[in-house]
Amino acid sequence: MANIKRLPMLTRLRHIPEPYRMLFIGLCTLVVMIAGYTWPNLAYAIWGIFVALMAALLYADLKEPVNYESIYISAETVEYIAAGQRKIIRLDEVSRLEFVREEALFPDLEGPYIESKWLVHTRDGSFIEVMDEWPHRKKLLKAFKESLPHFDKQAARKGFRAWGEGKWLCYDGQTETERDA
Image (cartoon, rainbow, N blue to C red; front, top):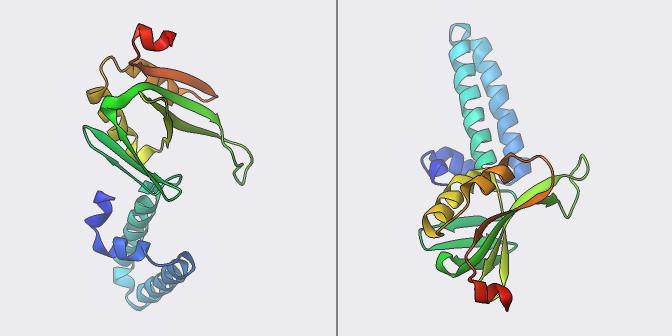
């Protein structure tokens, strides 16, 4: 979201409901076409600016996560907001971390698909599912590498590169006595 804030027009456009946004883009296309016919010597520049703005809008739209509202990552915590519920993960309380790829709960338009997520187990026995999406993958991975001793980067990479289902243990902070209990 920080990159979008640098372009105030794109930020304002994102808050417009989808049908009106499509109408706005259609009207802009019409204006660009008319301007191109009115000033033929500037047509390439007008279309170039229009295409660049549409590409920036598409990039801003793709950068937003689909499976959750927001995620804030710091060195000590991960604040994850999904389905209206706010979950705070203190990284010093993580006892086990797994990267999981499995069939999605709900099929997509083309049918079933595989989704990726992190299963974060805490010392109190609870766990939190954090969906893995590319806009925040690097930040989340960096936080895990810096905050969890013996974090297995290779297991995480294997999970990222996998095409099928699977489960990769990336961190196991339990002691021998905790595992036996």
